[in-house]
Image (cartoon, rainbow, N blue to C red; front, side):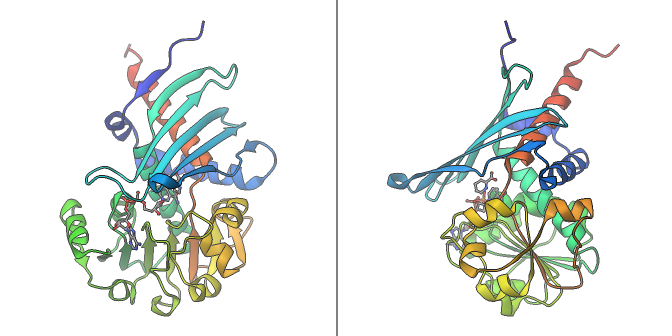
Length: 314
Ligand SMILES: NC(=O)C1=CN([C@@H]2O[C@H](COP(=O)(O)OP(=O)(O)OC[C@H]3O[C@@H](n4cnc5c(N)ncnc54)[C@H](O)[C@@H]3O)[C@@H](O)[C@H]2O)C=CC1
Ligand SMILES: O=C(O)C1=NCCCC1
């Protein structure tokens, strides 16, 4: 009989996951996904609208042959949540690929926060390798915090600006993170002159406009994961060189891509592998929707770290 699955809660996931180990694991997952050689199986996320309660439930399975990783994430994202509870909550199930038995149930909320920020950082590393002085974050929730933490660890920004719909939440954000943050009164003020812009809002209409964005800047557009939602206007979508995590998902899920009619230049995994160029002298935009392979690879890393910690030291 198979062993009972282990449970790894949020605090332990946060303790086990280090960006130093996570980044190469994610780069490999992105590359393997973008080979499209049949070795990675990842259907586009299946999302159930829960209209009555203004929310969605997403199911994200993946199998990666080379690393022999089988997992699924279940994630809820709700517009209205009680104060103090996160709009996004997730659980990851990690299976034994050889017989399909359940190996581990782990918190997926921390995984979602950390792997999404890490993938944006990978996009930034390839698409904006130099002149990283000013970082702008639009939004002040959980992803804003994980992006702030990752980006200030990985890059030498001299200034970080934040804008949020309410000044109160932007100030709360500034008080929560370590280091200086300039709270801006408008999105425009935050974006003008920034080298890197990150959009991490629950907006369904554009909050970022092309006319504000400095030529040659890089944008990570992380929100707006529904076909009718926008975070970015048509001008930016059409004038920037557009990179995505998955072309198939972008054409099914991203309102910014679908409704602007912008052409996708490449998948991020193709850039990491070197089969498509990083046009970093131009204005670039990475449209992130989040992929199951990112969760599966991260969950396997968490599980392997958990096993290594558990092993008695000889
Ligand atoms: N690409 C990816 O892999 C992932 C994307 N996401 C997306 O990232 C975004 C941020 O997620 P979290 O930080 O976890 O959410 P959160 O609920 O913690 O924060 C959302 C932020 O958006 C702001 N906001 C809400 N409605 C807005 C509006 N109409 N206009 C402007 N700002 C608005 C809120 O004030 C808050 O600052 C969401 O769109 C989420 O779905 C989340 C997980 C993974
Ligand atoms: O990748 C994810 O996880 C999510 N992406 C879009 C919003 C829901 C969670």
